[in-house]
Image (cartoon, rainbow, N blue to C red):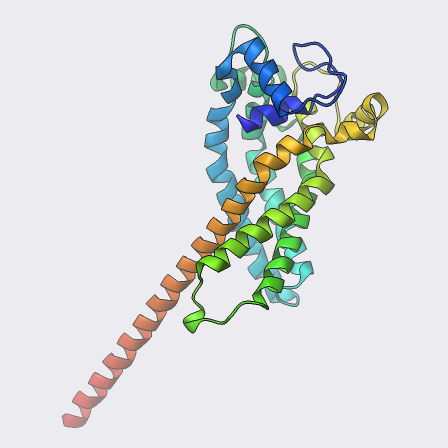
Length: 294
C-alpha cells in the first residue's frame, strides 16, 4: 500500500493521473482518500505482485554484489575505508538497478494505471513490450543510476555510524552478538537511510513521472527542469514524508537481518573450520601414534 501512496504523492501540484490538480503537495491522508474514492480499497495494493517478486532477488543481488565488491576493493585499497564503501555501494547499486529495473517499472506502471478496465501484471508487460520493445522496460533507468548516489551515501554513513557505535561496545567472549548489537544496526540503518533519502530524493520523483504512461516527461534532466519550472524546487520533494515512513522501518529491518545472516554464516563456517582442523589434528596424532607403535 505504501508503494502506491508514494507513487501517487510524487504528482504534486501538477495534475495527478486521472484526477484534478492538487494545489499543494498531497499528504498520506489525501492520497488514501483519492485512491479509495476513485478506484476502491483494492487499488491501495496495486503493483503488489511485482513488488513481492522483485524484493527478494533485488535485495539478494544487491547485498551479494556489495559483499563481493567490498572483498575485492579491500584487497586493492586500504581495507574498510570510506572509499571502499563508496565503490562497493556503487557497484552493488549499478548491478541491482540494471537487473531489476523492469520489475520496478511494471510495478510503478500498475500503480499509476487509472483506467476503468484494470490490467494484470502480465498484460502490463505485454503492453509495454508492444509499445517500446525491450528498451521500454528501462525507461527511467538514468534516474535509477542517479539514485545509486543514495545507496552510496547510505552505506558510507551506515558503516561510519556502525564503527562509531562499536567503540562504545563492551567486548564479549568469542565476539558474540547481542540484542543490543542488532538494535544498533537498526538505528544506524535508519539514521543513514534518512539522510541519504533526503539528499537524493529528487531522482525518485523524476523516475516515477518518467514511468507514467503518456506524459510530457521524456528524459531525466528534462523532467527535473520541467518540475522545477512548473512547481518550484519543492516539487522535487513531493511525497518525501510518505517515502521516509516506508523506507526507515524497512531499512532498519533489512540492515539488522543482513548483519544477522552474515554473523550466523560467519560463525557457522568458522566453527566448521575449527571442527575440520581438530579432526585433522586428531587424525594426524592417531596416525603418528600407530606408526610409533609399529
